[in-house]
Image (cartoon, rainbow, N blue to C red; front, side, top):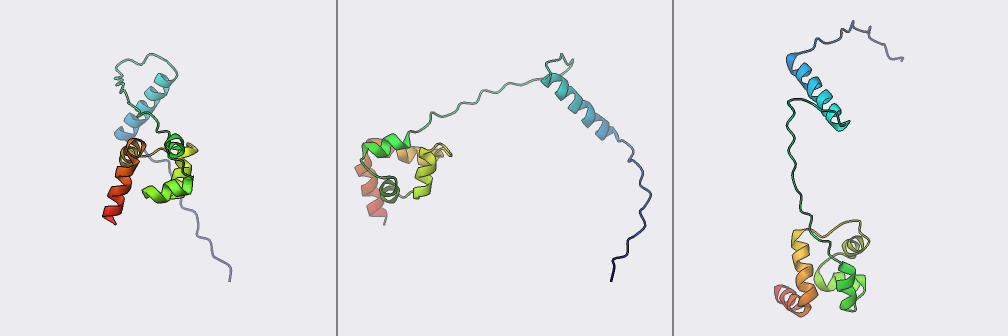
Length: 118
């Protein structure tokens, strides 16, 4: 059974609203600013973002003489996570950065704590 099509309604262009006009004006100002043009009345705020120094997971692991899978197993990471860190696809987040710093300086303490927690 063929699908019956409905007659198309007469569509009008929606009337612009004050909010819509203000939004378009703001977008045009942003584009002008991005092109390097002077835009009167625009307020620009610069924010400095401090990026943490990257953690060299490979160096930590190699200093311990462990393979990726043994390092991951010993310290509670997944092998895929260690691989992604070492290949630069991802970076360790805050808690992992702290744990890696402790592993780098006191691996025995981390292993001892993990053994006691099990």
